[in-house]
Amino acid sequence: MNARIDRALAGNVGGIVGCAVLAIALVPTLGSDYVVAFGFQFVTWIALALSWSLFSGNSGYASFGHGVFFGVGTYATAAMLRHTDVPFVVVLVVAGVSAAVLAVIVGLAVFSSPRFAGDLFGLITLAMAFIVITVVSNLAFLDGGTGVFVREQAVGSWIGSSTGNLFIVGTLIAAGTALVALAASVSRWGAALRSIRDDEGVAESLGVPTYRYKVLTFAVSAGLAGLAGAPQAIFLGYVEVGAVFTLNIPLLVIMMTILGGITRWWGPLVGAASVVVVRELLLDIGSPELSQIILGAVFVLVIALLPHGISGSLPRSLTRRKAPATEGAHR
Amino acid sequence: MSLLRCTGVTKRFGGVTALAEVDLEVNEGEIVGLVGPNGSGKTTLLSTIAGSLPVSAGTIEFAGRDITRSTPHHRAHAGISRTFQVPRPLPSFSVEENVATGCMFGRDSMGRTAALAKARTVLELVGLGEHAGSEVGKLTLHERKFLEIARAIALDPQLILLDEVLGGLNPSEAALGMELIASLRTRGMSVIYIEHNVRAVSTLADRMYVLNQGRNLAHGLPADVLDDPRVVEAYLGGPTDA
Image 1 (cartoon, helix red, strand yellow):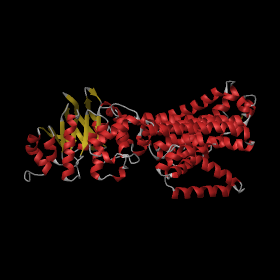
Image 2 (cartoon, one colour):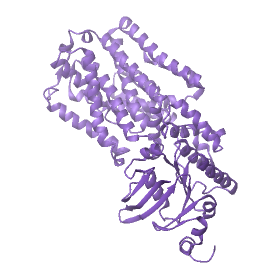
Image 3 (cartoon, chains in turn blue, cyan):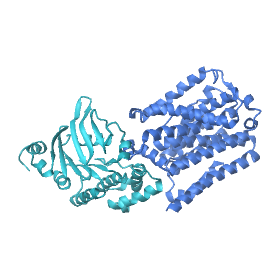
Image 4 (cartoon, one colour):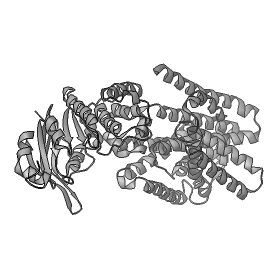
């Protein structure tokens, strides 16, 4: 039993690392500019869906603030590139830590009272978005309302020299997020979060320090989103509040997670991959309105037919063998 | 030696006083019965001991420490575990995962693999071994009640709070349950045992407390308490019909 779990775990880790290495080796060298740019967005959405689900999927506290954490990472990066000369690794760390610190502050307050559980938590994270947008718009060293040109600031560095390098960073972040999601799914950490989702009162009575787990996981989830936001600043080239803090991000991430299912750690990964690919295919229709409607209809249909999402609808025995293979979607 | 001491515990919900200056003491290795009519505050008192309800006044000491303001999980780590009157299994967890969660986060925190192994031995102990891998939704009422006990045992507590764990069971299931409760003492646990069925309590308990309308009515040896005319009056609504 123990050995079987270890082997399945090793298979999962191998799958994540293998897919990331393959993607990094092949996509920037063989892919066209278009493919590399698509690949960058693809891995960014995977990181966003997996990091959202890490907290919200596992604990049941649906956050609408994931776009804020992603945006904080993007703006932290833009500001660092504009005002400093530090290596990109440092920029990445600052982007992730900024988002995580914001989540700790919000989490410490919002989780301190059971009154803010459930729907109210979602509303508060939504309110947080408006506060952060206002702050960023009014602080000159971040934005000040005019938007920030990033491309020129990064053009001389390794990270700014090609989309392929952005893809490499994005893939590493997505793979790292997948490893964190996997770690949570097989450890006490995940058990604690899922017990909170099922019945927080029971979780406490069983000795689960629910407050600590919620604050810390919210911070890790936000920090990973902040990391994913860092290369995005360079990819966009021009950063503005309206485009960065869009409500599309939490809505799409929630859709991806529901679609992929939360009963397996890789559910949101499959969901993100499906949504990104379907959206890309729908671009060929030429009408954004029509493709939005089709995407919505597909979403409703899948929820009606597969209430537990794609990952939750496969029988256990099948998923055990399938799990490493499904990560092929990583490329 | 005193393990738990509640002194003047008061709980108000708005204008309603659910508990008024209740005193209760449990010694090490003791099984204490807690009885009283419906609405007398038994479950409320249990919840203040477990920490899920903060007290309005009074103190609760456990193993020599004041835990009046401790969170429920701190009390679980200190050695208090509880069952719920209406079973509350974690619905997305299997039977053994429910119990393993208690093992993981209880008094001796342990990793997932060790916790699952320990969960299986606990499930064997309560007679649910064959259901270890089942979904909780498939359990009968009696199995759910025993799962509550198994999960509480899994925390490896010094004091276990049982809230009507035998309610709604048929006589043979209840007999199994009573055997199980009696065996907790030999495993080093003290017990507070809420029960509607006074006879079941009086056979198991070393001492009994009777609550009425949120107040201490009587306490002492089961035989003495059951003979107390105030208890007969409050509990049975009159001196007749014993």
